[in-house]
Amino acid sequence: MLFGPPGAGKGTQASIIVDITGKPQVSTGDMLRFAVSEGTELGFEAKKFMDAGGLVPDHVIIGLIEQRLEESDASGGVLFDGFPRTIPQAEALSRITDVSAVISIEVPDDDIVSRIVGRRMDPETGEIYHISFRPAPEEIQSRLVHRKDDTEETVRNRLIAYHEQTKPLGDWYANRGILTEIDGTGSIQEVGASVKEALSGL
Ligand code: AP5
Image (cartoon, rainbow, N blue to C red; front, top):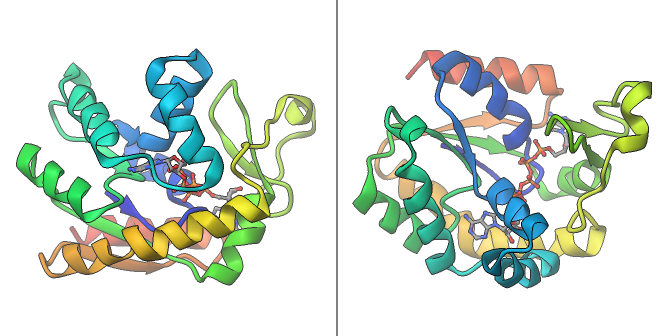
């Protein structure tokens, strides 16, 4: 599981873990955005929470995860990205399956806003870019999208939700002896090296 505040670099670093472990990435944020873009009932329900920077209710997320874990590619384990985000979600997950390792990417709030406001996504490949820290190639610039919840105001709300509801999970997993904390303040490459080191120690 990848754990950390919004914009810490979970999505950016997930590909390293997917490449090394071969396990599929399960990002509840991506699943919710897909539901929104498809105009499903779930997407309609989730959108108002996401746009405001709050968390989608636990029962919705747990149902989504239960369904996802029944898919055949999940039978050998998955990489969770952005899930669980509350103690009730972690408790529900512990009733479904065991979590073997949690890598926490630590980034102070002061660095988060600029990372998120400058983020751009490639809708064709899902690749994550940043206007300063990871500029996209010139030829794809015109198709990049800026996530609707990537505004300074919404980021502040997301950080409040993180500190109040998600951060306590770090202690929850530390008490179970499966949390590895890494410094997320270096460059994307430096953080990637720390992720690889953490993985090799598992
Ligand atoms: P979600 O999509 O999960 O958003 P998040 O956790 O807020 O995380 P982000 O995707 O914003 O950031 P990230 O850590 O992946 O960073 P990234 O690699 O992109 O969730 C969105 C919403 O859905 C939530 O607000 C909530 O409403 C709902 N939701 C989702 N899951 C839920 C759940 N379980 N329960 C309830 N509600 C849920 O990097 C960010 C930027 O920084 C990029 O531009 C990147 O290029 C750049 N960057 C990355 N690393 C570095 C670095 N080392 N140095 C400089 N720049 C960097």
